[in-house]
Image (cartoon, rainbow, N blue to C red; front, side):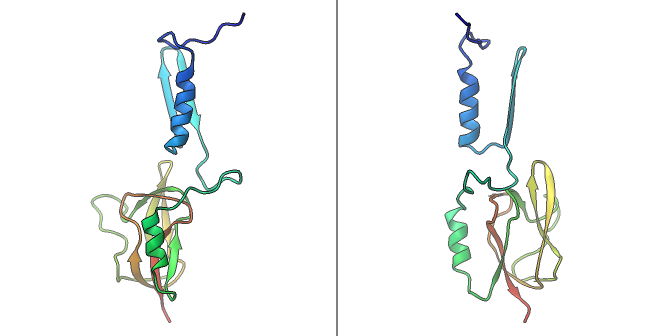
Length: 152
């Protein structure tokens, strides 16, 4: 009769299955745990929605704010999953504030994804009408970040 692998506490490796379920439940991109001579690494792709799984729902508040925007405003959306930051560092001033004029190609924010800081640029010239996300909040792929009033 085959033996089941035992954890250091003497229990079968239900802990590994529990870690996998928890990582999926809390949308953890990567997790590594080591005990004694044992090691487990769980890694998922988070660059965008996978064909087999629909994208995670966007926060209701962000959707409501985006829908409530006048039709002449354009939205700039998150090109990836990550953490939204309004400035390059905690001590630095924000890239833009509501009411600021912006140029096409101007950096509006950064999104940290897998410890890489990705600068998000404006695709249009105009004025920042509304910032739809709070600083240091997680964002989803396609989530509206800014409402921009384009130049006429």
